[in-house]
Image 1 (cartoon, helix red, strand yellow):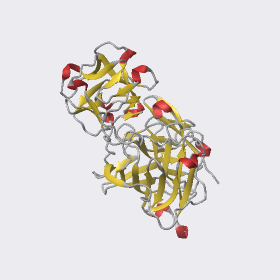
Image 2 (tube, rainbow, N blue to C red):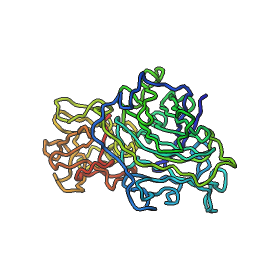
Image 3 (cartoon, rainbow, N blue to C red):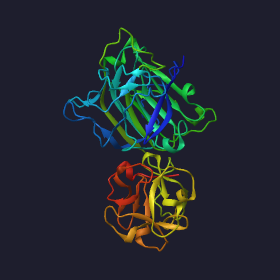
Image 4 (tube, one colour):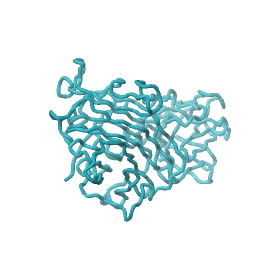
Amino acid sequence: MAAHRAHRWSLGGLVLLVSAALAAALLITTSGPATSRANAATEAQTWADEFDGAAGSAPDASKWTLETGGSGNGNNELQYYTDSTQNAALDGNGNLVITARKNTDPGLTCWYGDCQYTSARLNTARTFTQAYGRYEARIKVPRGQGVWPAFWMLGDDLGSAGWPNSGEIDIMENVGYEPGTVHGTVHGPGYSGGGGIGASYTLPDGRSFADDFHTFAVDWSPQAITWSVDGQAYQTRTPADVNGNKWVFDHPFFIILNLAVGGDWPGSPDGATSFPQTMTVDYVRVSASDDSGGNGGSGGDDGNDGGSRTGAIQGIGGMCVDVAGASSADGTPIQLHDCNGVDAQRWTLGGDGTVRALGKCLDVRDGSTADGAAVQLYTCNGSDAQKWTHTSARDLTNTGADKCLDATGGSSADGTRLQIWTCTGAANQKWTVA
């Protein structure tokens, strides 16, 4: 029997209905005792949080954003998400603990009135995204009717493409009335919400996931996504599974951890549900695969291979590189803007190393090589200030300065100006060429 849930996602004032997990009771297995790495060749670790730190300290703000609010996330959930260490904190033993509590703050208002519970939801939308690879977390889930922990991902173009076109990969969800079962699901156009495609995994011998830590992972390549629990692969999904609909798992995604209380799928807590309840995360780790990078699995583009590519350039928060005011005048600033398909967002990465729009070149003002030098549109002149390379790591590097195109201040806000900066690997320096 399928189950359904929905989320409401907000980022920079955007509120979208986001849906997640439904899973069939049928367990889909690979032949033999295959491990979760069967369908994706892994390479170097690209991102991780081991949650080392002092007991009671907040999650690392350079890695995680804490969402807040009591909207119900489109699913009639009962919790208010806070940014308090009462709801998300390190335990001093190398774990992140997300705690759902009965609310004692009369100032918190939820969609149904005074909030009954508080909890936490964390995401990496502003700090880390990646296409393909292995995404893994070791988690001990809570127990009890009405609790709902999840480890999942959304496409980084959520702000421009919208859900479900941006895609969603649910790596692990558990609802309290199924203590021994977790679900893995994909959602996209034509297979979202109640039509999501997935399966479940059930522990043997009547065991409960809340009794111990377990490792949940997906191995994701352009051809397939494989889910596993404790190294045992239990389902693989490919483009052939989406019934002729679009396979949207071809671009970077960001990570979410949350512990919800109540909602249409798990139902409300009952008299047997004790609080506080905790979701304890030992680590989250991401590795690159042979196909990982920012070009949807097409491989890195070094910008100088004798060919050219034309399309939007998307960065942090799914925002597009844009010529301010769509002006072709020399010196026009380059900024982030909501993606809208106009010519001011249509860039050609040329075989000569230039990046062009509106008949002119992406240029570092005054040929500067300093951190913070502004980027502008300027008549193409063959100078080093107009030579760029787009790497397989999704850096768009000015070769004259050996520095990266950078969204100022790590912001994804509409109108954020672009500059060059020493390459750091941060999300505000990662660019996907459509």
